[in-house]
Length: 265
Length: 368
Image (cartoon, rainbow over all chains, first blue to last red):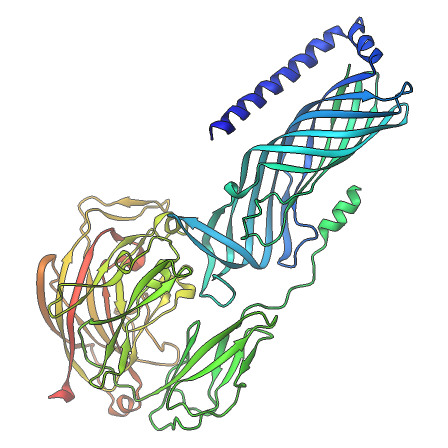
């Protein structure tokens, strides 16, 4: 808890720092002193901000999910900085490391059949198989560290590809089930029908893992001298849940498309 | 890349085969049933007319789509003793054993001492509740009392039997007694708009499946009865809970100043007709229920820490009599109902209201 609070504080100040430096750099654009100095060392600095849409999805959709009634990607903001080291004089090949404060979220409503479910209360759990509607809200605040190879395909276009590590310092995964029935324990267990206003909430937030990793690939288009337009696809390679968590019987992978702008120094 | 991702995510797979293995309906060929079949999760009770032989019956089953049953539906078997069937799910991964019992001319015992309970495990064995049953002179089980304990388990508030709304207590008039307590249903109960569970015990059957959806209709009151009842007697103790509450207009469970909780104990004799085979919480005492023949109610119920003895007559409703042919054919049913909060089925009452009951007796005219 304490750790999370510190991380939250840290990330807020990181965000402020990035915005602050973006503004001060704006002021320095006039003489280009910094940019010339940096590019002389083969280094390129960028701050960026954007939004991402996507979700934590099983791949492929398991047979238990019968219909997606609604999907709301939510407004997920991100802010970050990237350092690129060009490895050759022509600046064709390079390597980049970055740090990004990112929120990931989604809200879905789905119809499921025989879906693992667990309702917790009073230190006890009512677990079993749910057939009916499930409402899910996922929200995670993460610090993401991508390490990518960069290739300049065109004077204005850079392509990146590489792994990322992410630390989630705030995690929520909750929702409720409604309009269906629960078989307690397994499909042969007692049947409890939830209809009309009856719903039962669940919260798997504490079962989400903090460390995630995955692959990132994307493009950056230099629209103006200092302005980049970025599009990155991040693809999580481990389940968002801890491996000890068995109730959701399939793995959920975070897959997000980030679109945003960057300022290149 | 994005397109690949979307296409991989977007496909709904073929529907999986059914994993459930339920008996949904039972048909007994010929007009031999006296009541609709009672189907629980692992038990079926068929009440047949008195002239039906139990030696050779061939029940037919409707199952969860795709499931199979062994012995096969329509197999002729001897039902003098209960038979066991196994239902296997369509996906072949799950199976369930059902006991199928055929009852005929079952005369229930008429005195109830609440000496016998068995513990039923729920939530994977993490909690246990009491189920009361009565035995006849030969030690055979003559009646299983119904209660809403099974539904209470899913509120996750229960652990040992005495944390449930209905359990066996010490210090009865003779031996043990039944104890009924109005309980909080915790945050789960609040979320589903059912903040309390009154202790209850009754003759009939509790339909736990629909208890959340339709609590008044989850209590199926009554069992066939072949006698003419005259009086209903027994002993009770009652302590109302401290704060009487009910749901306000916004659905919040709020105190009602000045109001004190009250229990109820009563017996009802009624005619079981095809469109109302059993009574439920919505009509069991209704003045306009045409199927009620007689009721035995305690007019002057009171809180008491000592045992209070009561004896009340079965009062026949205006114009109602017993038809001897219907009586012999098992068309009448009787129920005894107890609750620690008389309006508990409407979720009005005081948490902690405690009713103890012992030595109930139904006296019949034919006994004299």
